[in-house]
Structure formats: structure tokens, C-alpha cells
Length: 249
Image 1 (cartoon, rainbow, N blue to C red):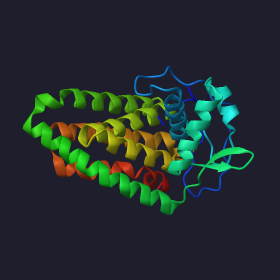
Image 2: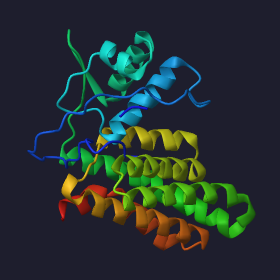
Image 3: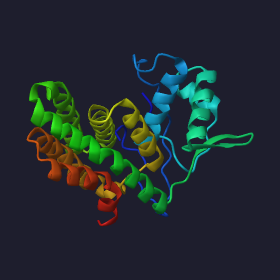
Image 4: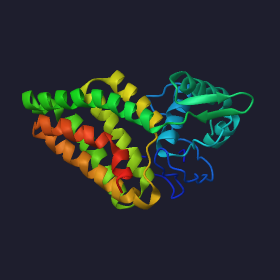
């Protein structure tokens, strides 16, 4: 797969506004088998490229050609080009004439705005899940089980210092949280915003910050399971502001 929000030790970890140069990755590995959620090659390419953006495999300072990405991902050129153009349309990527594509730079103000919007979705999603648990616990068993697995995977990866594994599991957690709380459209909107934020802690403090974030989502599942709505709403918003924990180290 492209190289959960954890892959190899070479993953770039930086905070917005950091002057530290990025460390180029040795290359991207082919993506995973095409899942049912990506029935076309374009959708599969888009899924894999989004994952690469999330995990830091695609660098803000690098221009990527569609042909080069297609070769590294083991996907034909047309679906990759179409996927990149979709990302251009949504503002995650910009086209560089006669050269290829690059990620749109994200400022701290951009990041604040993105997180505020994501919080507007996460807050009612958590509230809805807590209400459903209180009204009909049996109907929430599958959703809560999935969220707990994602949270525990994130925690295990953080303990192992596996940054890409943590980011991958954390991304899945927030995807499922939104999907189970508000629906698939809300989850997709939040994931697109997450892809645009590209928040990574500095490598020296990544393990600490990842561990804190992982513990938060484990605790969040417990709060939802016990219907502690106000505490759960406050915790999910704090968890989204990942970059502030990195900045305060």
C-alpha cells in the first residue's frame, strides 16, 4: 500500500509553519486491493491517494506527476489522473502546468478553520450516538465494537511508535464516528477536510502526542458507551485539535 496516519520510519512529521525541511520518502508502495467501497479504478486510486496524503507519504514541497504516481501505485494512468483532478476540484491538490500536481499549502489559519468545521460535525455525531446508546443499546453494539477496535488499534500503534499505523487507525475511527453518528455524507465531508489539514507532530514528540490522542479516543468510546454526552462532546473536540498538543511540546 502507499507509503494511520503509520508506515515506515521515513514518514514526514511537521507542524504547520515549521521551517524544518521535509524528508523525502523513498517511494510509494502499491495500494491495497480494491475494496467494495471503491468500485471503479478512479475511486480506488482516489482512496489510495487520500490515504497517502493522510499518512504524510505525499509531501507539500514535491510536485508529483500522474504517471509517476500511477507507476508507484501499480494503477493505470487514467484513473490516477482523474483522481488527482478530483482532488484539485475539492482544493486538496493544485495542478502545476506542464509538471504535475502538488498539495495545496495549509496555513495555521486554514487549519483552525478546518478543525472548527470538523468539530461542527463531530459534536452532533457524538451526541446522536450517545442518545442512541441510551435509548437502544443493542442497536449500537456493532458501531461501538468497530469504534473500539479502531481506537485500540490506534493505541497499540502509538505504543509501538508506529506513526502510520496510528494515523490510519485514527482516521478510520473518526470516519466511523461520523458515519455512525450522522451518516456517510458527513463522514466523507469530514475526511476531505482531514486530508486538507495534514497535521503531523514533529518526529521527536510524535510518539507522545500520538499516545495522548489514542488514549483520548479509547476514553471517548467509553463515554459514548455510558451515555456521558457532555463529556464525550468536549473530548471529541479536544481530540480534533491534535496540532495544539504538538505545538505545546
